[in-house]
Image (cartoon, rainbow, N blue to C red; front, top):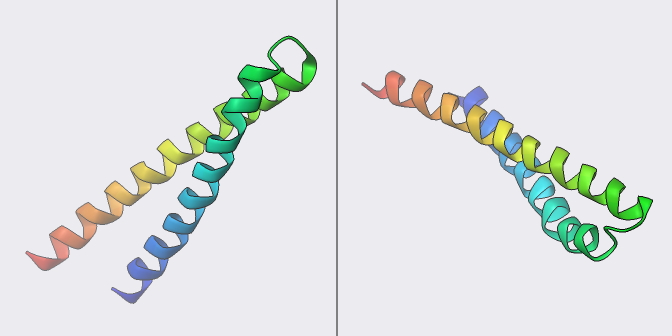
Length: 71
């Protein structure tokens, strides 16, 4: 059980970091869409959004494991 708690804390920290990256980058990506900088920022936004989704899926799997252990 302690291992699962540690995994959840790590995933929550990763999600927080990716949310801040995605939240800050999409504005600049739209603002500078005409040049290469805007394209790079949009790629960074896409990668961070995908990482948020992936980590939320891992949290869902861990949630199912915890539920099964408590039943």
